[in-house]
Amino acid sequence: MNMSEYFEKTEGYGVLATADSSGKVNAAVYARPHFIDETTVAFIMGERLTHGNLETNPNAAYLFIQSGKGYSGKRLYLTKIREELNDELVASICRRCDYSMHKGQMTRHVVFFTVEKVLPLIGAGA
Image (cartoon, rainbow, N blue to C red; front, side, top):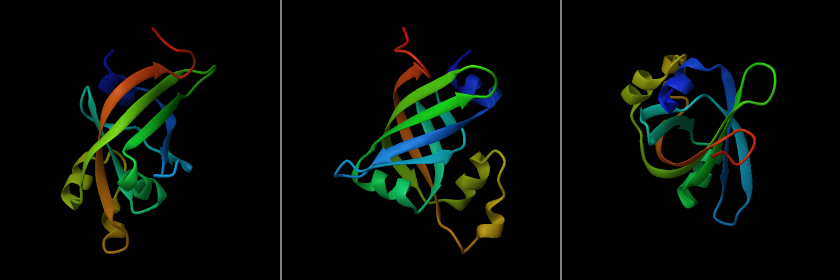
């Protein structure tokens, strides 16, 4: 199973970790990544701490914890490559959200990342 299939079919939850330019770390709960292709993912984010950190430090890590017994999942090491401020793009890639109620209230960015490395949730992997 490739990565896009894994994240489309697997239930669980994720945490996106970022740091600012001085190294101060933040972690926030995020939905599964939107796969553009097997090496590019996107997240929808508001203008909050995570987005601000990515303005000065393009590196992030996404921890996905698979639902069920035990500790299964993935760790994605990411580098921001670009972002778009585009409500139509947000609506087209959002899986389970209706941002129409937020129009004019919150700016949403689509932030794109290159997947640098993928590891299992626990262990160093192959």
